[in-house]
Image: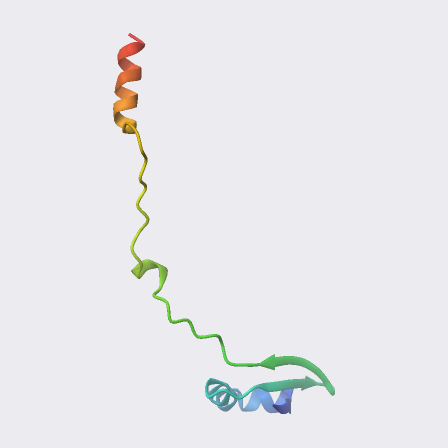
Length: 76
């Protein structure tokens, strides 16, 4: 794990992120104390939610529209 101070990180942020993308973990110090650890994000192999098929609701018994129509008929 590489360690660098905050000023060095600020000056070289693009290079730091490049290195993190390739799997390196970097610890950032401010005034000699660790304030952050930058590590690669978890990679997900799943499709985004908008590309996944939607949910289908299946209800056993009579349909809702039939139940509403019967209720309307019985209340007259």
